[in-house]
Amino acid sequence: MPIATINPATGQTIKSFDPASPGEVDRAIGLADQAFRSWRQASFADRAAIAGRAAGILDAERDDLAALMTLEMGKPVEEAKAEVTKCAKAFRFYAEHAEAALAPEEADAAPVGARRALVRFDPIGPVLAVMPWNFPLWQVTRFAAPNLMAGNVGLLKHASNVPQTALGFEGVLTRAGLPEGVFQTLLIGSDAVPGVLSDPRVRAATVTGSNAAGASVAEIAGAEIKKVVLELGGSDPFIVLPSADIDEAVAVGVKARCQNNGQSCIAAKRFIVHDAVAAEFQEKFVAAMRSLAVGDPMDPATRIGPLATEQGRDSVAEQVADAVGKGAGILCGGRLPDGPGWFYPPTVVTAITPEMRVFTEEVFGPVAQLYRVASAEEALELANATPYGLGSNVWTRDPGEQERFIRELDAGMVFVNGYTVSFPELPFGGVKASGHGRELGTSYGIREFCNIKTVWIS
Ligand code: NAP
Image (tube, protein in one colour):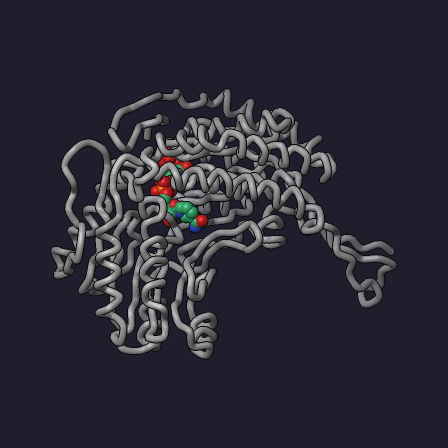
């Protein structure tokens, strides 16, 4: 894949970059290794001052950074602005909470025969972050804000189609006063990842992306005995039961499916609706999907821009064609529009059966699958009948039903009468093929790349 900015709304190449040479990569790793020696000694107050300044720069430069993301990957510009604001919040959050999250924990010394026993959370060193293009600033912030506060240093291998956003992010941190080498963007293709991760100076890796990328990096990490956090794909259920507020479920469901042009790991992808409310939900949901404004992502009125890459758009079209070929129905959308750019219309697919690819695969575009079920049991069974287990959403006002779905949904996150969202305050991650490890939260994410060091003092 070329390292280049290619406008997905037009297909035009705007700017290309030469990948870093092996020598340049080696120098960057050396710099990271050196930088770690002093960064690990920096006080939380010093780190927090830099994180706070980074937040200020993100706020001040919100519109420019948002326009850059939209140019490179096509998300509606208003969503891009909200993403930048969210990144600023996360930097402030970790600036404020990292010290408490990583404060040494005193343990009960007497049973272990010590005068004092405690657990420390020490940084481990340079961490490689392999990141996707879909939330080009947020995904990197999720890694960078907690890890830099924890005293680790970052090497970013961003997706090849968002090089300018990657460099822009590094620039924000540099202008915030982050010392040289503490966070570096490596302009490299995925073929260079094994070499970086195999380098003994690189201590761990985190991957947010497809299962293929996750499996490939995890294989190397396994061979190298290095920790890896995997945030991979999802095919989240959005379950609507008879007691739900249907109008609200429809409005939230459309947003949950179509945010970021449908390219979100935690998008609601499979709508599982009880027979008692299925007709009403379908009619309102299809009408709402049809009404979304598709067009130029730089236009503030646009709700659906182009998909980020031609290959991504083609994959969605192939998955829908496969379903239709095997008997699925299309309630709206489903046809590639004429004209330039990699647009795909909001689409609702119904009459889905297990032999269709969409039943088990993640569909990364504005395509909702609509299933009908006769009972809560059937809804649960269908919701869990996926290789994935990232987010999940259930709509019911019945407390007993809520309790049951919270317990039995096989997913890393359950949202009741809402849709899956990431917050700095709450851990984020999945089970099954959606990966392992957690990001975010006041302790789980920030401790992933810490040495949980036991200290025993006689
Ligand atoms: P992708 O192709 O896996 O790309 C993600 C990153 O991995 C890019 O930097 C890519 O580099 C790199 N990469 C790809 N193949 C690799 C390999 N074999 N070895 C090492 N690195 C490799 O994913 P995508 O299609 O761009 O992103 C969408 C996927 O990410 C979806 O499945 C989505 O659900 C998932 N995602 C998950 C989360 C989460 O938190 N769970 C969040 C967002 C997205 P190149 O660009 O150079 O190929």
